[in-house]
Image (cartoon, rainbow, N blue to C red; front, top):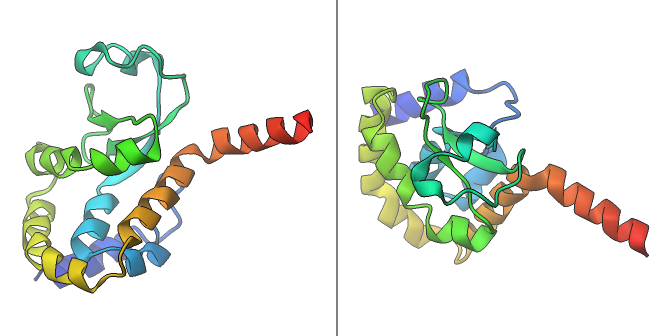
Amino acid sequence: TTDMLLLSYNEANKPYDPEALVLEEDKLLLTDYFYFLNQQLKLCRFSEKDRKTRGGKRENIAIGYGGLECRHCAKESGSRKFFWSNVDRLANSFAEIPGHIMKCRKCPEDVKRALMELKLRHPEQMAKLPRGSQKVFFRRMWRRLHQDSLAKEEEAKADGD
């Protein structure tokens, strides 16, 4: 069943993963679908070879900038990576991600099936979550993606005082 797959997948990913974008404490903010979907992603850093992909919209991204990457095709050339300029853009265009996961040739079929099953429960679970909880999660995720650059900004502000 889907719940068994979720349990075994969660147990397999139990040790702290510095590339993880969704943590145990985020479960209170998310539906099972959204939590499991985010487990299919990992933190990545922008590199020079990322600049030349996906329509050339990446000329202004700094090397080392945090983004999301599909866990399943991450080791492949041309793996799917996502970089947004701010947390609102991340939240507003996150819908691209399930589309990739469902089409990804490296994503296991049981993960795809689980996502489809969990998506059926998603609307009912969304209705029970506190309003704005997904937005809180996106802010948390943004901090995880950009904690290095946010810390540098804080240091620069402190030095300027």
